[in-house]
Length: 360
Image (cartoon, rainbow, N blue to C red; front, side, top):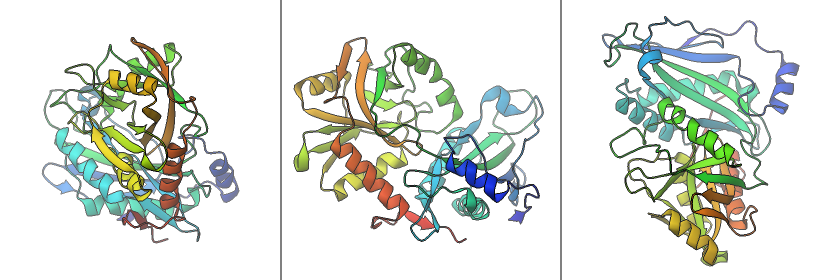
């Protein structure tokens, strides 16, 4: 990989101040990675270069036809001061799968991982040290052919940027959700399984509707029968049935319309590590409401790379309003959250081979 270091990198003291008060997506590291692809020449040599604006022709395909994909992943500070990535190979595979669905070039896994490790190594100082904080890494790819006309692009550019990240939601507070019956996120055969910008753009009107109802997030139901729970905003959902050691941790099954979340997949194993039975199920809005009202459903949480695990309290829909338990984060939710964070930060043994050290 070509390396061009930033001669105007943020001074160490200023960087430390930004990392200590990072928020989410407020500050960006000193470098980015850019890699070009052409139909005739394939992938070119990637370059680590100073972070900065990019220049594109107004007729660039991505502006008009939405050929774009992205990933979200994190690097975590370890007890010895080192840095580790969490399941980067899974992100590489999902990135390639999204590319295929959007008629973009599939980036080889080795090339994808090389770019990630190189950026994290050179911008290691931007990685926070507190548990629950991380270096959030955003790979993305856009169609860069210039010209109007609906066709698969013959040019694409891969970019990689990173930002120090605190908590996406306050884990001590449960979020409220609005179950949308007016809008649909995805249908069978659509782009629901792909991580592409269009899915998120189309969700924003429903997010505005949720905010109007006084809720933090929107929950999507299926497009066909309009009753099955799918996912929440940009996160997957989990439901805890029962209490204590006999509790069951369940999540909506992948039907081709849900994003196959890497955190979702990790929690299926992490919950089993903690002794809970897990299951992927079809769960309806009625099941949710009735389960909460009967006490069968005792906790609900959302999960994703950005939020990790976020408790869900109140749910509102056209059918009414109901609150899970006492409306506060539940003990099993927080146990799973802390267990997963412990694996990511290296304080709990990783028996799954998920954590990959970055050579600094």
